[in-house]
Image (cartoon, rainbow, N blue to C red; front, side, top):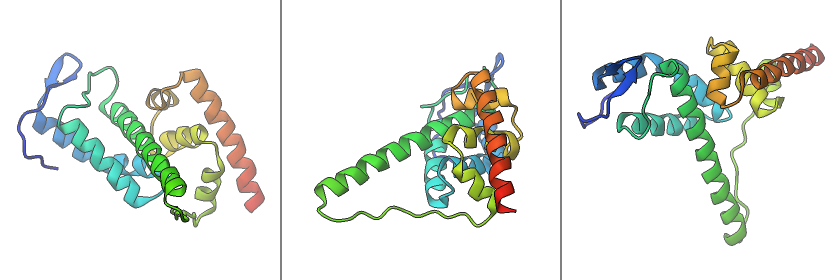
Length: 176
């Protein structure tokens, strides 16, 4: 991962300053997990996930989002990805509504279908339940880390997690 500028506001890790090269290395190591999380936040649309993740990297590397060391870098980065994906879809929804209203025609929205029972079952979960399950199972996070990323209390995340497991159990039993 490269960027053409060498100026970057310092990111703190604990009480030490993370230099740009170190931040780039950390982001590169986290890229596979970050892309997987971006896919989850982007309804499994690869193009949207790539767009969101690119925006996240630009935002982080030019200093508009700074890591202050209050959590792990991975937890912080996943929260940035989630917020960027939410903003991305909010903007797309507004554009879509404007196209329908003023375009005089039909707008086409991307259709995303899952091929496996598990992905299909995950897609049926409410957003917060799906997010907490993906963070815990796919990204090896604790429920507390997932809560921090999602911007909810740990208790709320635990409730979403418990409900998601129960609903997945029912949905997957029906498929069998």
